[in-house]
Structure formats: C-alpha cells, structure tokens
Length: 432
Image 1: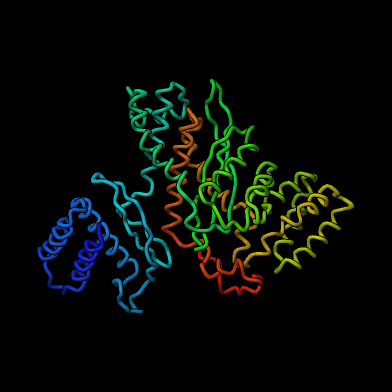
Image 2 (image 1 turned 180 degrees about the vertical axis):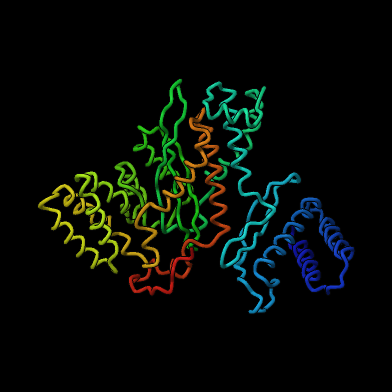
C-alpha cells in the first residue's frame, strides 16, 4: 500500500475514535467500508486482506484498552492499570493470506492477542511427528497410544509429506532468519539430548540451541541445529559460524558450560567477546572430585564467591577458598584456580544482570520445556521430525518472549559499555 492509502486508513481510524457514544454500528460499518473503497481505488491492495487487517488491529486496540484501563491517548491516572509500550511487528497467516500486524505492547505484564493461538503451530508439528512415525512403521508404545487417541489411520507418505512441507518452511524461515538488525551483547549456548531412529537403531542427538539478549533488553531464540551426540564437539564451530554468517554481532559475553569444542569455537569465531563459565556446571565438576559427604561444603564455598558485591571481593574470596581446599582437595583447588578468569567474567558487566548471566540456568529452563513437550514422542522417527517439533517449540517461545516483558531494562543494557558498571544502583532491576 502506498503512502496515500496509509493516510486514508489512518484518517478514518482517527475519525472513528473521535465519534460520540451515540454513533451507531451501521455508521461504523459504513465508515470502514468507505475506507476500504478508497484504499482499493488505489489498485495496490487486496480489499479482503486489508479488511481483515483493519478488524484485527481494532480488536487488539480494544483488548489493550481493557488491559490498560484507558483508551489510547487518554490520561486518567485513577483508571490506568498499566502503560502502552509501543508496537512490534508480527506476521499472521490467515486464509486470505499473510497479514502484517502491529501488535501493541504493554509496559507491565504481557499481551498476546486473542486472535493468535500461541500453541497451534507446535500441536501441528507434534501431529506431523506422530503421523511420520506411524507411516514409517517405527512406532513405540507412546506413539501407538497417540495414534489411537488421534484416530490416525490410512495415512500415506505423500499425505504426511504434504502436511509437513508448510511446517518445515516455517521452521526453516525461523532458523535462518537474518540477525543483523540489532546487536546481542549476551549469548547463551547449550545443548539438550533427544533420541532418534537412524540407520535401524536408536541414537542420541544433541539439539544445539542459542539464545541471546538484544541491546533493547529483549530475549530471543537465535538458533537451532541438530548433531549426533558423538559429533557435538565439531558441530559447535559450524553452529556458531552459521550465527555469525546470519549477522550475529555485538556479542560481549558468551555463557556456556566448558565443553571443549564449544569454548574453542567461541574463542576463534566471536573475537572480542568474553566467556563466562557456567557457575552451576563448574560447581558440579568440583563436586565430582570429592566424596559425597563433602559435596555440600564444596557447593557452599563456591556459592559464597558469587555472593560478593564486586569483582575484587569475589577474587579475594575465591583465593581463600582455593587456599582452604588445597591441602585436602588439591584437584578442586586446581580446577578453581584454572577457572578463575572465566568463572568471574560476569563481574565486568552491570550488577542488575549478573545473577542471570553467571550461569546457563535461563537456557536450562528452556531445555526443560523442550524435554517436557517432546516427551510424548519418546523416540523420533527421523532427524527432520526433531527439527520440525523443536523448531516450532522455540519459535513459539520466541513469540512469547516478545509479547512479555523485556528480560533486562533498556537503561541497564546501556550500562554494558559504561566504564564502571559496578556503580549501577539497585533501583535498576531486571524487568522480569
């Protein structure tokens, strides 16, 4: 649509907003029809699609007005429940074609339009996996139960392929989308493991997942790749290289466990970024070096290091812990001494972020959601079925993160490049 068409629609919507309470439904309908007639006269717009878009926008505005307590532009502190916070773009696939929506944001809480079903795509992907397993003849007891519950009979390979094609296209578009639009100062990398049938046997596959926090404070899913469990080390360099080729930039801190292939890839391909060794994984590594009776003491001592107010205090406390453990648990002392630079890397970043960026816990929670929603399958029939279902789960999680609060406040994100991030006060807390 050209600029003139936008002005016509905007003028019509503004006039409808200014109507009095006595305006009839017929008048509103005529106003909308008149708008569509004027726009269609331009010859550059599908009238039906534009009508659906206008109706959807009106519904969303009404829902957000109810959520905030006041209409857009209205000032009434006594009635206001929360504030609007701009818009985000969202593609909506409908029977009349793909529609570009401007979904309103709210400052406190989250808003997901009633028009959009956040779980529908994953349910379709799950159904496709079950059908694919049925057709391939590799069903397990879990899949047999689902086949009976869903009434899947008489499916052919061609039918399954036709149904999977649009799902695969959606997942591919999500996985391969460009990332150069904004910088991502924080990057989490982790893997979760799923069982797949391949070559007549069941093998373990690593689903490599990357999430990040953009400069605006929004958390996003950035990438997904599948690799045989025994090949995970060589898969990480390819995965990170793919993120960079898609435009990943501005990474200041990478948070992960100490997988050798992963860390090597970070050092070589994300030059200029620091690496934070996950505190939780490091604690587990240290506990594995001592008798079970001493594991609680090891965890408490390491936890005390991270509770220090700044980097200098943390390094001093870590030195004391190392000296204490050296006589009795020399292996633990060596591990902590070697890990010190990377274990405390998060102290160079704003204080409100440190609790979230010192471990892979945020990523672990995402992995648990993947496991929870893939457990109904058990053993996947093909690699493609894993990518299809996990990709849809991640795409929906990405949508929900955008609909919700920002992970970090924008004003604290601006402090990442400040000379003295430790001076950030407690008033600037994480947004969620």
